[in-house]
Structures are given as C-alpha cells and as structure tokens.
Length: 609
Image 1 (cartoon, rainbow, N blue to C red):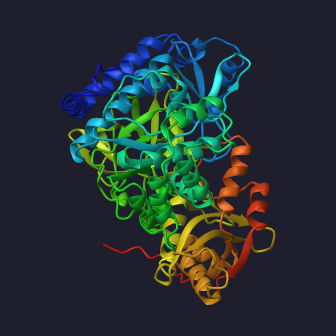
Image 2 (cartoon, one colour):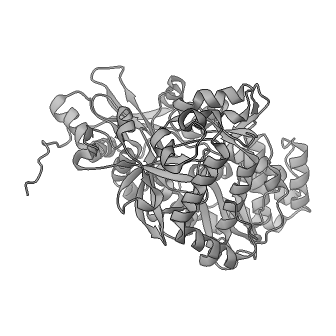
Image 3 (cartoon, one colour):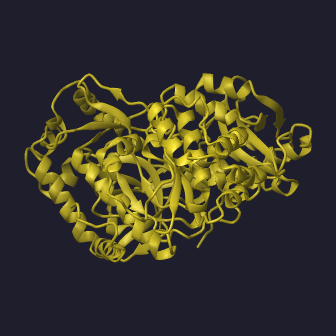
C-alpha cells in the first residue's frame, strides 16, 4: 500500500489523492487484509485469532485497546524480545510521544517500511500546496525544525520522538533535490543537538536568505512563537553576525558552525542595517512580513490546543495566511488538509485510507455535554472507559456529518484497534473520504467535584474572556491551568502570560476590575455542571487568574525539555499536575485575581415534543 510517486509530478500527486479518496472503502479493506495477512502469526493477534486473518473475526475477537493494554508487549520488545510479539516486520525503533498529552511519554513501534510511508505522505503535501499557492519553486522555506537526543533501550533499539526519527533518517538526510521543498536551514543546523545553537543558526540563515524566503513555519504554533521570542532576545547579536560575516563564538557545534559560515559568507552591512531597522521599531506588529517580504504564508499547526495562538500569530504575521497542512502522531500519520488556505478555525483533515485501518468510537454530545453512548450517561464529552467493550466502532466511510468520534487505528507497525485519544468531528467529505476537525485530546480535563472541563471547553472559555482584553491592547500569549485543591472548596487556577502591544511592561497598566471580569467570563463560559457546582452545590470556589511575568512559559518549556520532552514536539499543557511545574509558574506571578460573581445556572429542562 505504498504507492510510487515522483514529488516533482504535482499532477500525478493530485490524481493519486483523488484515487485514494474516491476508493476509500476498497483501499481500507485492502489495508486491513494486508495487515492481518502479514501479522496473523504474531503472538498478539494469534492470541485472539488463532492464526486466522478473517476481517470479520478481527472485529469480533480483537479488543479495542489503549496504551496500558499494550504497554507490556512494547516493553518486552524494548527489553530484547523479538518483534514477532506484535509485528512480522522487524521493529527498527520506538517512537516516543511528546510527554504533554496525558502523562509520561509512550513508546510506539516503528519499521523501516513505515518510514517510506511517511516519506510519501510528506511528498503528497507538495501538490496540494501547489494547487493553491503559485511559485513555491521560486524560493525557499524557512522552517524551524529541531531534534531531541535519543535514548537506547536494553534491546539496542533507539527510542526518540517521531520527528527526530524522520530528520535523522536517510530518507531526510539523503533526500533527492525537490525544487518545491528547499530549506534555508542546512541539515547540520536542524540536526544540531543543542536547541539554542540550532535555533540561533536557523534564524541567522533565514535572515541572511530573507529575499529567497517564500514561506516560514515550524511544526506547532507555539514553537514558531518561541522563535519570535528568541528573535526579541537575540536580534542585536544576529545583526552583528550579519554585519561582520562572522558567527558568534558561542556557536561551538563544528558542523553547524561550518554550514552557517558558508551561508553567511562575507560581511553584509547593508543587509544588517536593513533588518536592524525592522527589529528596532517600537511595535513588532507584522514583523514576519517585514523581515521576509516575499513570504506567502506561515505553516504551523493551529488546530486543537494550538488554536489559542492564532491572535498572537496574526499580530506578528502582517496578514499572512496561517496554514495547517497535516495531521499526524507518533502512532501513525493520518491525514492532509486539502484546503490549506481555509481559516484556522475551519481547518479539516482528510484521512488518507492507505495510511492505516481506521475505526471510530462514537462520542455523542447532547445538552450539558452529557454523553449518551449505547444508553450510557456520563457528564463528560468522552466514552466511559468501562463501557468501551459494549461499543461498536464505525468504519471510515460510515461516519456521519457533524458527529464526534474517538479515533482508533490498526497500523502496519503492530498496533491493533488502538485508541489514539483524539476526539474528531466530521465536517464533510472529499469524494468518499471523510474530513475531520481535530477537537481535543480525550480526557484532558480540570476537575474539582463532578465537573469535568476538557481542553476544548477551556479554550472556548478563555477565548471569550480574552475578548475583554484585546480592545485594551493586551494579547494573551500563553495559558495553562490546574485544579487547586489545597483549600476547601477547591477552585480552578489559570496562569496567563499577557503582552501589551509594543510594550512588555503590563503589571501597572492592567486594572484589577478587568481581570476580575475575565475570571467571571471564563466561569460563565464553562459548562452547566461547573456552573451548578459553583452556584448550587458550592463545591467549587471562585475561579482565579494569575498573571505571570513575560517569559514564564519559556521557563516552563525549558523545564519540560529538561525532564525529557522534545523541543520539536512540545506543546504547552493546558492542565498542569506537576508540583515542580506549578512552582515554576507561581514563582513568576505578578498579579492574582478572583471572580467576584457567581455564574448563572438553572436546572436543565428538556423540550417536550
């Protein structure tokens, strides 16, 4: 199921995507048949199917599982047992999760063949972009890409994040020239193990080649904004390097330094003066378009929890489109955004039916976000864990428009009916393949009592509250939260990092009454169960917002990286449970504000028909 494809042939690439999506059902059946035929004799599948690979028997006998159910099998391979436990193909490495989605990093099996599948996936992004944006072969992309040091398991298999795996692979390092995909960053800077040196050198290369840059980006919106913060802290030094033609002495990674020196070349005082003039302006509004005037768009993931960065990105972008091209995870690469110029809030991904066998667990939302799945009622927008076995999955082509689902995958690498943990909503179809909007990670919640606030609900509430600040010139740069149960009743705490347009000093500018209104607005925007707990049950105390110093969330990321998270995959967690992380945030608080009102609530009444 790995098609041959020349990435220079955009017309054929689009035809391939049309064929895959038109024949989605047939492709999915072939995918499942191929996976079962190859892996029926593995220890895992044989325990359920007794060596048979009937597709109907597969759904009847093989359970839908989460990571805890398969963790022991993966750990056995990591400890030296053969790959045949779960995969007929040799497991060549283990891919770790970001570490910010529900706890500790998980290890996902990967094979050499799957690396080829990912390479084809990346190549198929090119014809989609070419369809909507002209002239991408007339310049370069300034993409800020990073690696994380890998670890070796007892078996000798390497464990590393999925993007580190790809960037360090021969598929990336020895990739054939593609005029549509030329980077300003030399591979040596991307593969630099020191993230600060890597960031500095990639930005320096991007500035030197500013006239060739047609697109800029990073994997996540948060990483791109971190790069802007890095520019704010280092622009004078960067300009000095450009002016002198010499790289700073603290860049000590030899291969990285040599590669950057070749690009830097001779002294460029005129270029240094030009970019220095842009950096020195009082406001950095539109700075991306000013520094890279030929840029056509910013490519970053702005769906899910990344959506909260959209206003800040728009402030810096100068009106450039924000483009999310793909949907992927450590488990599998899933889908492509076939309408890349759509507004961030309208982004939907079409799952490619040849990447894995896809199933979906229905997640129904009714009044008060009550879930009614097979008659099961729960005050949360997710399936009850102990009811999973009673639920029947839905195939890729059978999902319904407007419905919510939890994604389940069977991969070519040894995961069978595995719950990814992502909640998706069907927004349409491309031919016969459904298009999904990524909503949130399952069970990323705040909870004090019977309330359960998920990531999407928190984002919506924060979005409503920050509308009070934006007319006053304040931007919400970052936020996270935790459930403070140190007092009775417990209460929600939100940490906000704010920025004043054109000014970093905000502590004396923001009025307490405005922040108290923000607290109240967040509470009014949360669900009925939360508001009932606050107003009727008195089981939750007033919501608190703590304003933190500029740069606090950079410190939080540094802490996470030190604890083992990947710079490239890091996403600010929307709920903090680590006491050390909370201490980092609390040590930088410059203002504390509480809701002064109790949110409105009344008992739910069903309409009679």
